[in-house]
Image 1 (cartoon, rainbow, N blue to C red):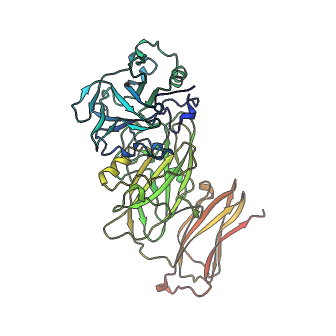
Image 2: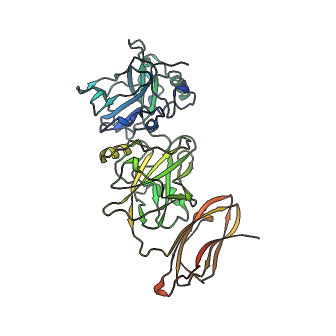
Length: 497
């Protein structure tokens, strides 16, 4: 099919070569942007100037607030020169999705440039150049069509779909045909219709996918927040979890408690948690970044102080069944320094369940205004952040190491080998396994003998790449100390029984 006119994507990642859409994904258009009850400070980053669509890989959308005016923006690409298209907007509740005659065109307003809002559901997008990237409104220049949508507050949690139709005829000869369509028999039939009409897009305003909340109690049908209060970035401090699945229970998921305490100058453990809101099993890659409260611009978010399995890495993969809460079994380890006076760390996550192996590119979002940064995060359902409460350790460890480990399947006597370590000292160590049965976590263990080996039998059903994080305090006031050549190593002895 050769399609010309105004191109809005039916799914994230669709390009011109993917017209018509054959993926079966037709209800997640990233080019219908429900922005919330406050207008965008800037729409400059909705479209990247580059053909790689860097900023177009971000959703810039969130669930609407029913009963309130929500700002809606549209972005598109022109596949024809000298194009003047009319774009029509409709909405419906989920119960009416298969009934196009019941799709609603009311509750929209359009204000052109600096004019007053007018109640209507259509506006124009035009460009002279082929391949131009368009946005419906520029708030800085105050040009374009500023759109609001006030979905009714029907019931406790109405489930809305937003629908757009582009008439590329320039003379109004291809208006929306919805009023004349018979009901669709099922979702597949509706999907086939949408996919056969590249000038039509649909957005399920409830976020579908692997969902990491921005605030406690948030659902995938509630807007985001500017507060740095994600309950799903679980920071356990300098000690790993013996069983991360305890944070996947309904009670733990419903808790409003934030796990945000870290010990500065030491390695801390982080366990991302997600809820699969889709109807199929999914795997998400959760990336972590750090910043400080005085340097919150996304372009400056850093990923270099994280490790996984003892190697530099800032992500873990998490798989969950439909409707399931899942927590990373293998944590991300984070080494923090002491921040500048008057500042604190902020931990940021990006959750990608698209299957892409490419990390997000935040370099294009060089916002310096704090309100713009907060609005950027609130309108990104894949991003969450958490303010970190850091405290210095009561005593800085005399030894602190992370030992990378690659363990083949089997049973091992696993633990520590001391060499010349006086018995007056204590150790705390964590070895995350593939489950609670082969995870080893010990706190404040006295050194039993300067050259002792202390081990526990652990069985690993499959090969595992992990690490052992160790902290040792000599406790010199009690007569301890370390001489030359003293060290602590990992004991990993295959069982012969």
